[in-house]
Length: 307
Image (cartoon, rainbow, N blue to C red; front, side, top):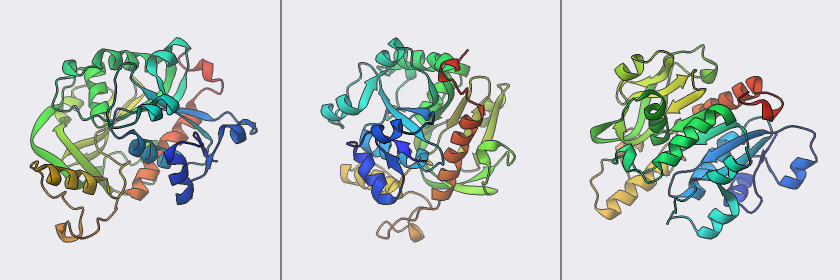
């Protein structure tokens, strides 16, 4: 089954060219199926790139997906046009006002790692969203800073600054092969990492109910399951395109910012060579497993979520 997104969205044409099944609202309405409603709270500056990355993975599952794009109510972005935001995004205040519910919600990272959480201009509203998920979302994923922020809100676990940026592709161990979210995973896998902060394993271990599923000896915990709050925290970037780390590296080089060549990304660590994607299969596995778990456990009547 395809993913349902707006036909004018840039991601629609990109995914269509890649062979990902996409459909318009009109075609979806003619199918006698309740699609899974998946929200994307997009906190990244380049909204269009992030939309495509997640829609590509969510749209590869065999279920019909109704993907909705959500923004913070009063936060403005200078990297995505106001026309794009107005046409494709809805503010959280509107969604809360009409009491909408979602089978799944993805909360992206944001380039605010260096700030204390309380310094983030939309922190209060984001905390309200985290609380809202407990009555209006069946399963949530927090990605990178989004996952760290959820851990802070729900468990008072803090992020810690790194002496240098964790940047590159790092091996991660499969810590719980029987977990449904890791169905089909190898004993270890390569995952892109791009962050200035970390979550520490001993602090995760201090909280009952948190289960680390993927761990790296180099960059620490990656994937944590939180059964109590029906949440998943992934601190690294399975959703990245092949060229995302290259873009970040080239951007920083052009700015004259201090940056290391991303580890284990270019052949022989040579930036003049095309980078290699060694995480694509596991990214599809993870998000496909998440969608399957939602499908197996979410109420058929969407209004029953949270009841």
